[in-house]
Image (cartoon, rainbow, N blue to C red):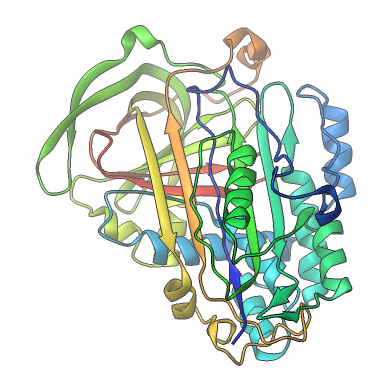
Length: 432
C-alpha cells in the first residue's frame, strides 16, 4: 500500500548566540539536478526601518479576524496537548505545524479534509489557502536585523514499486504559488533522497538542524516546513551582570546555571490566576513572553487545557511598573512525534489507508508520520539602545507597581510575532 509521509521540521534561530552570522536561505540540494526541482520566489524583503513598505505589505495581505482566531485556537489547543508531558524542557512551533497541515489539507477531500480543516479552523480549503498566503507574506522577514523565514518543500517520488505515481497539477501549483513550496523529485528508496532533504533542512536553518533520514521505499511524498527566526533584544542584558545561581527543579532538586539580570526596568506585567507574566521586546516589535507560575501553582496546571494556557499568555490584570528580571540562559532541543496528538484532536482519517488525498494523487496515500524538531536558545545579546532612543520620549503612565520576574523555577515562554501570531510556545524546567 502506497503511503504519504508528512515530515514537519522547524527551528527557532538562536537569540544572540549567532547574531554575527548571516541567515541562509534553503539552497538546492546537490543531489537534485536542475531538471528535478522547482524553486519558489520568496516574498520581497523589506528593510528594517522601512515602515511604509511594512504597512503596505500588511494592507495588501489582510489577515481576517476569523483567521486570527483560528491560528490562536490552534496554537493553544495543540500546545496544551503537546507540552503537557513529563518532559522538563520542550519547545513547540504551532505556526510550522499549521502551515504543513494546511498544505496537506489542500490536497485532501471528504472526511480527511473535513477533519484537517476542523482543526485548522476553516470551513473552506480555498479560504484557508488565501489566508495562509497572507499570513506567510506578513510574517516573512529578511533584513539586516531580523529573520523570520518560513520555508516549505515537497519531495515527490514519481515511481512506486515499478509503477508511475502522478501528482496533480492544481495541488502542485497551489503549493508553489500560495505556500512558496520548493519541489524536488527524489527516489525515497535511495540514501541520496534522505541526504538531499537533510541538506535542505540544514541550509534553511543555518546548519542548526542536521537530521538523518533513512531510505524508505514505501514513501511517495514528504512535506517539510522550516521556520528560521532571529531577532535582537531592544535592550540587551549586561553580560557583566550574568552570574551563576540556583534553579529549583520541579522535583525539589537544584541545578546551577547562568542567569541574566536586569534591575527595575519599566514595562508592563500581568498578575493572573496562579501566575505572573511579562515580556521582553525584540527589535522587530515581536516579543518573548515569560510566564512564571506562582510558588504554589504547578506548571502542568497552566498547560492542563487550552483555555488555561490562553489565560496564562493573555489573561490577568495588567500593570505598568518596575520589573526586576532574572532569566536563565538556556538551550532547548525538542523532537515530537505528533500523530497520536493529532488523532486525539480529531484528525484521524488522514492516517488510515482509506484516507482521501485525491487532490494530490489518484494513488492511495495516507500520512504515516508527523515529526517536529525545534531548537531554542537565548543569551544577553541585542541591539544598541540608541537605535530606539526615541522610545524614551513616548508617553507612558506613571509606574504604580512592581514585579519580580525571578525565573528560578520551571516557567513557560513564548514568542509572539509583530503581527500577533504565537510562533513558539515552550517549557523550561531545567536550564542547567
